[in-house]
Image 1: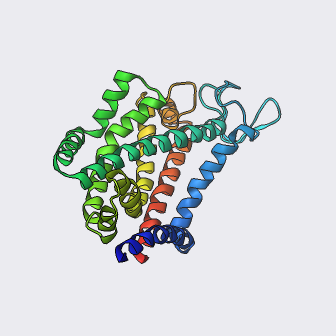
Image 2 (image 1 turned 90 degrees about the vertical axis):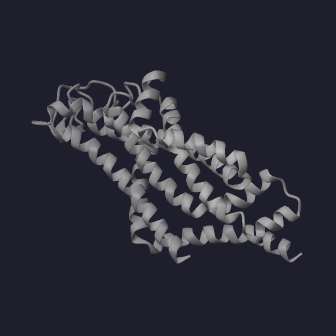
Length: 294
């Protein structure tokens, strides 16, 4: 009876700790600044269709420097690129692409990695041996080579980028989750659930994974930053999102030869990548700081 009471109190306690951590977020200046950077790009990406922006893919006028006047009386705040496209529009609409595909890729990688890790850690035995072997094989490949092989073979699309990130990231996530589960499975509330006759699936999904959330949330923020860099890197190599949609990495690659007299065309998307990744990293540092107080 005591074990059951302890287990029943566990879920509310976990939820309470989660909201407590959210409340503590404002006490970490690093986390607040990181979240502000992320929200800046998220808000711009959401409002992009209603903002007074030029078509990001339409050639408007020959190359224009920043703050140049447009034919319609408007202003090219960041100028136009070598193809006459508005740089500000391409950067903001490019944020949509990065945020959507980076989030989707990280989410899918986490779903696969968490399922692999919790099964390997809780069930053990041959499950652990097989999953760990597959993960070690995938981790033995250089990440950049794995990306290039998958994208080159399957084609440069958003869904193939998700697949490539999942193959590259899920094994590392699996190892984190497995280590956490090996520790958590010896806790009293797990024994209480086993005593009640709960199924292994219930214990893994309801008892183990929610209680492993702290380190995983921090790692997810970092991986969102890594995935953002990955998407930009693939775009720079010509293996990113298909044209004509804006791609920050592709914007840098296309304008790199013009850097001697129009360096802003590469600096602006590079700064966008850096600020978004910095936001994810600072948020992760802040969350780690909060979790250490808890």
